[in-house]
Image (tube, rainbow, N blue to C red; front, side, top):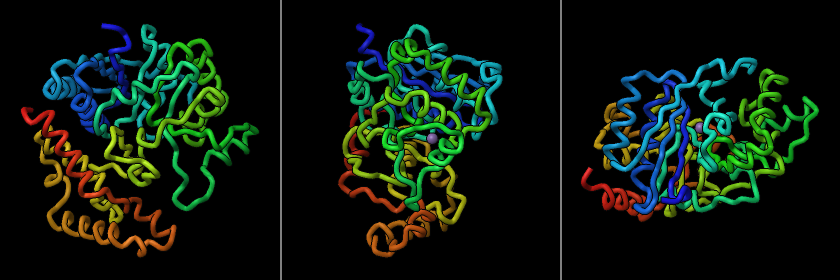
Length: 334
Ligand SMILES: [Mn+2]
C-alpha cells in the first residue's frame, strides 16, 4: 500500500482529556473510507496505562483495521517554554517534525472535536505548495479584534490577520516543516516570549506566516460559529469553549452539534452519556431553550446575547437525520 493511502492522525493528551480524545478518534475511525488505512498517534503526556488500553480497545472495536501508536513524551521537551493553559499536550504540535521523523504528512487535531464523514476527504487536500493547511479561526463573537492582534502589536510583531488560523486542526506537510526548521523557530519563539496570548497558536501563526493556507470551512467548524460550513458534507466539528460533556453552566444549551456528540456516543459506541451528564430537567430546559432560539433567531438581536449563549446555530433536521443514518449504515454492527 502506498504511503499516501495511510492517513496519519495525531492527538496529544493527558489523563484529563483522554476520554473526549478517544471519542474523537473513534469518530474518525468510523467514517474513514474502506480504501484508506488509519494510523492514530497519541502523544502521551500523562495517560495512564488503563486509559491507554481503553483508548486502543475502543478504536479497535469500531474499526479493526486502525493502528494505534502511543508516543510517551517527557515534559522536559518543553523546558524553557512558559506556562500553558489547559493541557501541556497542546505544545506537542509544535514538535511534530522531530517527534515523527518518518512521516511526510499528518493531521494534528485537538481532542475536543468530532469527525462527521470521511477524514480521507481532508487528507485529499494535501498541497505541496504550502507547509500547513489549517482551520479557519472565526471572527470573535462580539466583533472585536482577536486577542492576538494586540499581543503581536505590543511585542512589535507583524502577522497578517487575514491569514490567521486556528491551530486546533492542522494538515501538516511535515517535509516542508522540516525544511523550514519549524521546530527550532517555535522553540526560539517560546523561549523569547514566556506567555504568548493564545499559547502555541500565537507561536505557530507567527512562525508559519506565508507558508499556511486556510482549509475549507467544513474542517474545524467551531460549534458556536458555523460560518458557511455545510455539515451535510464530510467535516470536523471543533467544540471550542463549548465542550459537549460539560453542560454545567446556564448558557451550555443542548444545541444540535452538542447533541450530535451524544448521538455519536449512543448510536455508534453504545454509550448513553447524555443521561449521565445532564439531569432530566436539565435536558428538557436546555434543549427547549435551544429550539426556541433556533427557530426564532430574531430574539438574538444583540451580539452580546449571542456571544453569551455561545451556540444557537441549528442544523436542519434532514442533515441531522442523514448524519445519523450514515453512522448506522456503516457501523450498525458495532
Ligand atoms: Mn480545541
